[in-house]
Amino acid sequence: MRKRSFILLMILPTIILISFIIFYPTISGVLLSFKNYSLYNFGNIQWIGFENFKEIFSDIFYIDVIWNTIKWIFFSVLLQLILGFILALLMKEPFKGRGLYAGLVFYPWAVSGFAIGLIWSWLLNGQFGVVNDILMKMGIIEESINFLSDPTIALYSVILVNVWYGIPFFAIMILAALQSIPNSLYEAAEIDGAGYFTKLFKITIPYIKPTLVNTVLLRIIWVMNFPDIIYGMTRGGPAGSTEILSVKMINTVFYESNYSLAAAHGVIIVLILLIYAIMYLKLTSKKEFSI
Amino acid sequence: MKKLYIKIIKFILLALFLIFALFPLYWIILTSFKPVYELYTFPIRYWTNNPSLYGYRKLFEFVNFKQYFLNSVIVSILASFVSTFFAMLSGYVLSRKEFKGKYALVLFLFFSQMIPSYLIMVPQYVMFSELKLIDKLISIIIVYSGIGAAFSAIMARGFFDRIPKSIEEAALIDGCNEFQTLFKITIPLMLPGLSAIMSFSFVNNWNELFTAVMFLNTSDKYTVPVGLYSIISKAGIQWNVLAAGIVIALLPTIFVFAIAQKYIIAGLTQGSLKD
Image (cartoon, rainbow over all chains, first blue to last red; front, side, top):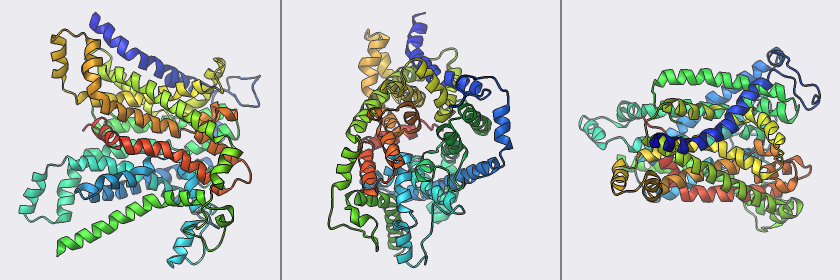
């Protein structure tokens, strides 16, 4: 009995706090999505069934938002992974000043997404932006590019910034996994005459594959739920070209003040994530959860 | 010969990554010290011979940035302290004890991580306005504590797993009860882990924008991200002022990150992703 009360005493605070801050609001968020609660409708809040969802799905631009979200996730995570992997490989062998180098090259990860968005919107500015200036001086482009005001390239601009932000995370994860590979594996391969790429594809990648799989899958959830950078850069514009699901939802709260409609957007996002998480659990099929 | 060749390529690549990471930081610091007349000049200047504190001065005159900073410090420290403390207790039990419902609890923590904070922010707003806590810092301190607690508990469990049980068993035999063992033996050993967890939530709390924008309405309650948000909403704001705000906003997280980097990395990798 004493053992049980000890356990309860230790875990109850966390359970109560999380129930109060996350689970209860989640349930009322789901309920909210079936009502008509908005800034202009405080006095007459009613149950309206699936109206909000109907409104979302009948929006012809919604498909564009989904498509933007897919592109945002796919390119962001792919490039973060590839570049993070390369950076981790470069940092694997100790070199003089590696600790300092790590601190400097990993710092973007500590910066707020919104601030990152602001910084880069200044760097990528079509008129006074330094990126245009550098590209022109290097002779890569002749005329300045409207990175953020041209709807055809704005999404790729925000993806580029998200990649900048996410490289450190992948590099940190992969670097740690690389450190755990026993050196004897490489030594044996070298005796057999294996070259750099043979070792990379036959030893390194298979060995750290669980880390790669986990990191990518969890990263996808975070990237999907990460409106901050886009909010700092474009708020979804121009002409909705950088609007992803989470940005759409934030805009519904802040600009339209339609809280029930926003909740419906949120419910759709959570459903997508839930399906995704179940797939993730199936794929990794483990009982030890981690994040 | 071939070795040297590889070394040079490696060096170039490492340098490129570093430039890519640092250039935006350099540019924003430079902009923050540029005098107004250099902001929009052509050709673009990569250095300034006339550094000016105008941006920083305006930041503290034009908006109440000192207050924002103070608010952010209070909110981030308190919230990360609370969530770390709760996470320490539950993480310990998750690591050391077997009990009914443990699997469900881990599931509970895991899924609470998946709920995007902006889905629950409207219901949270309703909840806190019923409690008459809107526009008070305590409201976002509570929200951040709750959101941080789940992640921190999972991380804490990973750290506790790395502390050998035998040390505790020895203390128990010596007559300590479980609380004494936890607070006198285990937690001192956990300090690096706890500081990693705490600094990780500090960084998250410091950077949080959307809940704070929604919950804090009057200017003297703003946190730093809300302050920056309000600056860009005001017409005619100059880039050197905004850059100064960003630089100041970056300082605490970079400072915390630099100090705790080693622990954060160890915590993220060993404490969380267990393969």
